[in-house]
Image (cartoon, rainbow, N blue to C red; front, top):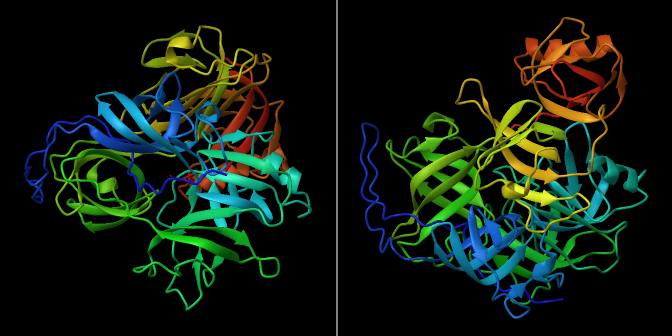
Length: 506
């Protein structure tokens, strides 16, 4: 097993011009003291979006100089084994949308066995080593599992506890939003090395602290607890699970630093979750893969996907800006990222450089869209330019409600095997429905459910009346209902199966 390089990283760096002092009719923010805005050295972190170069956060990093001496992974993988959705940290140089990688480090948020009763299909959640993990339509599963239902079947009545590696950022409540899940083994392996990153929940005792629901025993860790670790600190822990109490017996505790000594003037792109708003319209704390940092912004800072009023605790954001003297990140642009509740599986009928058409709907793609080829071709460098009319695609997307009608924005595009004519998938929020059924509208498409089999979020069969009563109850409570329809690619769609899906809020 390779020793992972202790590089403290920030999220994907893009080439930005210097940020000047900005003022507006709202609160004024001092964005001076930014240093040299022309510096192209930096570090990027985020899920791998594609290959050819290694594409992270819209930057394609030339990895021709990467070999076993500068590729770091605790499981001994090589760069050829990187997969779309894996979180990586890249140090190197950046020039616009192009970069050159000097080092690549594979990151994971938690690595260990599933807990008892580890899968909850009704909420799309998973429990791994005391950590809550949520999946959405864009989560990539690997090595013999394709979804949470597979993991629940594998676990059975707590007979097995699959060893899982989970990538993705955690929100302000410590919930990991999985971008990639790899199954290492069908059941717990005694003495296997495990790892978790997260926020210390409460003051440490003389020998222990807690991350999520997992107790960490650091009494035998070389050097003990690093200075400065208190409640709310963001740490990485490695060790093994105790045979008797299942505590994480640490052999390493590292206090993470979201800034990591990055000099002022460095250009930064950060993706994470708002921890709390410190001053409305001026600053907030953001928690990313390496802890909490302060983001400052002004009324003139462009915001996409929403407005400044939408910036609140628990919201996923992407911030482009420049590191300020003292460590704060001065925002030049903020993008509010929405949950991925949309899924379409059908054939592409039109493709441009910035969009594709599936189910008659235009789907926008951008620099953050992740691509994967799971067809028999299995093209590693698969991207927008490789999609052909007639290709079967699985599209995971979010809705940008700042436009009317709402725009469909792809988070992930996967080329898949050919689909039968009555096995196309349309999933999204229900626009409207006939009281009592059997018909409803999803993304403006009329779905005919007269001959469909109905089921709830956990797969339990429902009658037509029960199914549409759930829709009615949610509407009365002001809640959005997500439904997955299987059937024909047409409008109206003839559905043979309709299932209520958990709603992922962000």
